[in-house]
Length: 139
Image 1 (cartoon, rainbow, N blue to C red):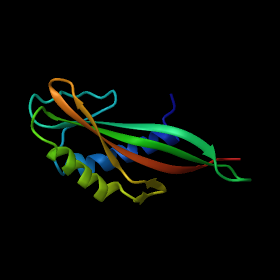
Image 2: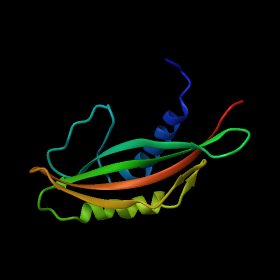
Image 3: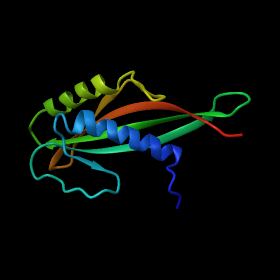
Image 4: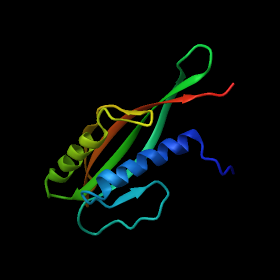
């Protein structure tokens, strides 16, 4: 295993750090990250945050450059029958910190909210945050 982070690991770390600094610690919203220890709260809202790389295309002629598209998904869980305010507060903060922001070459597009519904214990809303980032290849 290499000690140098791959390009996609760097993108993942950037998006997680942005979420931690501007959403998780501000609202506050306990957040679970992929394959990391987490204890689901018994009461109160919580979140599961994932970064999903998508399609990659070569975007130049000559010196290679690759455009990666992907999404971050924030699955927001609230206790049943407590309304939608928590998800709306989270999407408000997400829009403030992510929408149309360009951070070190990573461009966030417009986030949007989708309602998933109840699993019997929790109500789930998903916030989808699309992004694009360019990777310059080596010759």
